Every structure is written in C-alpha cells, then in structure tokens.
Length: 246
Image (tube, rainbow, N blue to C red; front, side, top):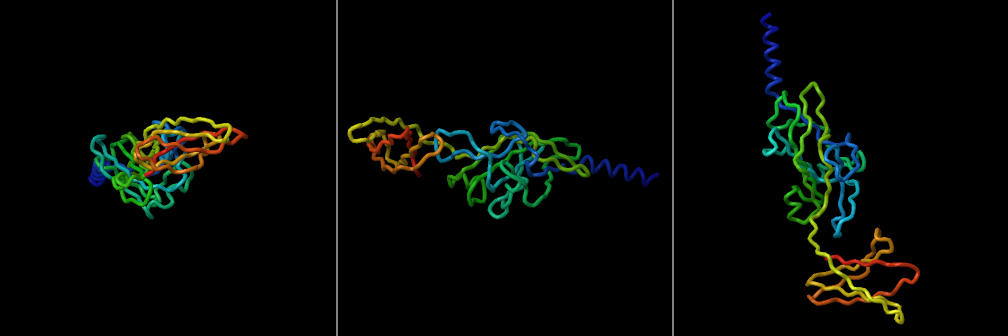
C-alpha cells in the first residue's frame, strides 16, 4: 500500500511541475487567407514594389525563430533555424513550415497542468543568422503577433502551431508614390513620361496587364523633373510605373 501511495504522489509531482511541449510546425493548418487570425500559413509579400498587391503562399525555405512562454509579456527563445539548419522546412508544400529535426520542445514557464501557452514567430530570408541581423541587412522579414496555442505533456502528443495567425514576409515599404505625367506625340509615335525625381536611382517598368511588369530603363535622379520617351505600342495598351532602387 505504501508503494502505491508513493507512486501516486510521484505521478502528481510530474503532472504539476513537468513542462508542457509544443511541435514547431503548421502543416495541419488550412486557412488560405493571408489575413487569418489562427490556423494560419506563411506568405511572401511583394517587397520589391509599393504599393503591395496580395501576397502569395510561401514556396521556399526560410529561416525562423520561435518564442514561447506561460506569460504573454515574457517569451523566451525555444528554437531558431537558419542557413543549412532551415533546409527542407517548406517540404510539405506552399505556406507550410516544418521543423526539419522532427523535434518537440518544452515551453518555458509551463507545467503539465498547462493546456495552452503564448508564442511568437520571427521569420526572415537570406543568409542572416538572426531576425535582428536580417532587419539590419534589409532582408525581407516578418514577425507574428503574440498568439495563444495548445500545449501538452506526455503521453499526449505535442500540438502543432494551430493557433498561429497568417505570417506575411514582406520588407517595410518606404517608397513614396510618384505621380507620372504622360503625353502622346502621334507624329513621332512616342509617349513622353515626366515625373519628379529625388537624388536616387529609379527603375521604369511597363506592363500590358498590371500583373506582369518588365524593366524598361533606369533613370538617375538629380532632384529635378525627369523626362523619358518610349515608342507607342499601337496594338494595345501599356501601363508604366517607377520604383526607387537601392
């Protein structure tokens, strides 16, 4: 009888003080909206142009760091993956991030009585080793808001990141809109574009459908209005835009 009591007490101790676990992947998530507040996927935004159009589902490996804790205002790093350690994370398909090690991780501050905890995800592109370095280097990045997610202790399987919102990887847009004036010279068969340019390098792009854009020429601004001329496509319409290059 004493042995049974001792085992029972030991079991209670494990339940009360062991930490809960989480699996760092979202391959069970199915919400295909880039505005999803839970059950979300990873997305890539068009960081090379402003204003941005709708993002598309992640289709390549990316670096990631995962933070968690029992207190939403006190999250600790659980695991970070970058470079070769992040190879294969997108193997399960568009929008999916899967831990390449297949591991499970204890969540700081939780116990086996915990049924949920708080998390935040940072992701970045490029060869940088950390989210902070990627921001300093101007790489596309994203950081999720803090979100709540289920956790569990053995023998239960650790939950996936089903509580995560959609995460859109996009570089901060700092380019200001430029108004382009267009005039048509029918005799010469050309159009003339005019726009105010700062001391920066500009890329002129053209499109016939506002979806696919082609680089036409580069302009080096000097603080004055720039004027450029292009031949007219008489077989259809053409749209033009500018963007500032690094």
